[in-house]
Length: 317
Image 1 (cartoon, rainbow, N blue to C red):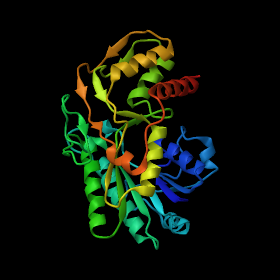
Image 2: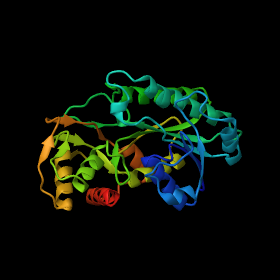
Image 3: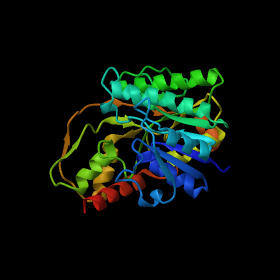
Image 4: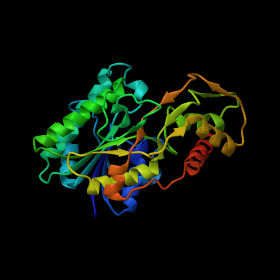
């Protein structure tokens, strides 16, 4: 299926990989970023392969008349809504910050309303998060799409509110939406505020102790290049109004990932845990996704870690 895809947040980490994947699949693309510019980390080749417009989702008037006309001319049949304030620590602790609510919730409203206004209504693939789930236990960490929701922090609360907004539009017949609950994903080009690149940037740079939060967290982590394949498949095959977990389906201990990175780096320097102790994240049940699409993660963790380390070594040279 040839798509005409609009990607919000195309200049971000996942957006760049999604754009590369869709272009390789023969899709036509239009991209949005807050200021109509690429990030320094964005692949140079993307700038020559797709048009980029400005859409500041944190502002109610963040889409100009000119950009609106560009979207109508392009006539997307799918919108991948990735744009978000997606670093949890930047979204507020117990309650969302005003900016997180403006971008993640009201920004999603803008995308849904823009989709509804187009002459030929596109499908919207909305990227939500595993952070919407209620806390899990070590004894029962696996979650299906029907597991209880109950986010404790601002980021998860904004994503859940945006999900409800999307489902309201579906129920009213105003939108065709597929919701993705993305679990942790990583790889080269990811910002160093996230777990693996934070570690890899330290191994590639300074020679002091490597700071990590804890070795004893259990997480579900997937390579970003596998994740964007799942997004494309769900945009093509997902059911309107349905929710799909996208993750590896495996529980991994952060200390084991750290040990793998140390071996690949050939560096046995000291590790400093800043928030030691056990932590249990939700682990994805991906039966709904795999049954519908046949998708499975293909990139082994060792390659993800090696590619991320190589990226930071090259960046620091």
